[in-house]
Image: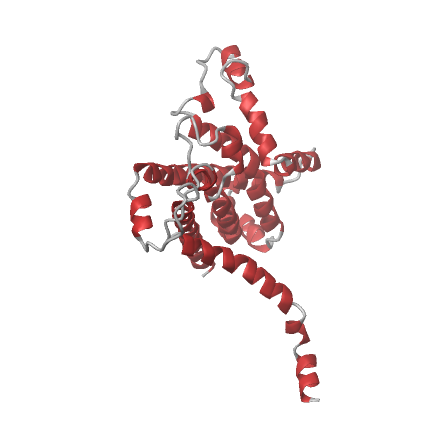
Length: 292
């Protein structure tokens, strides 16, 4: 009787328990296994057995100029992509929060980049940025502007990839912020109008501070995703030309499935995990501070 009563009193915890355990194992095991592999020198092509080398594998990978450059590209790509997407996303959300003709159509068109498959987006933009037959250079030529090499040049490949990322993921931030704006109370805005505040002053000192926690939440979600960007970069450049667009995720993939150096690939992925974790914690603290 005591056992059955205990079960009845804790049904709300027992029912989801199998799913919680499954998800926990699904997340924890890969992380722990990758951490273990990062402390080994496992190389599938050497024929040598897996052996434990400790942090020697970290010292080797972290001292490589190729790794340092990939880490820098990851930060550059993420910073500029997320910054541009945040500014554009908030601006578009503020515009869509107002009443105007064609508002429903504008929201519908806004969803189109989000429903597109990233690999398909990469293929389409490969054609768009093609130096000889691409639409981008055709537009520049028609406007009398100098043409570019886009993803074919080491100097312009990262900016080109940022353009693609901004096109696809700005709507996500817009939708999140738009939902936050829809849930705001009208009383502070009406009070500001009564006090004689202009539209710009209301936006800057009332609306933006009120919706800031939502904006930071959108930035957190986008930041985590941008740091791990793989599909668009791989579909468009594969990390090229040379190593010019190789980020940590692309480098980790190449070390695993092209060079078969599983130990060193795990080091790269562990570092990427730590970067994502630290950046997420930092913005979450900033979000908590904005709510105080």
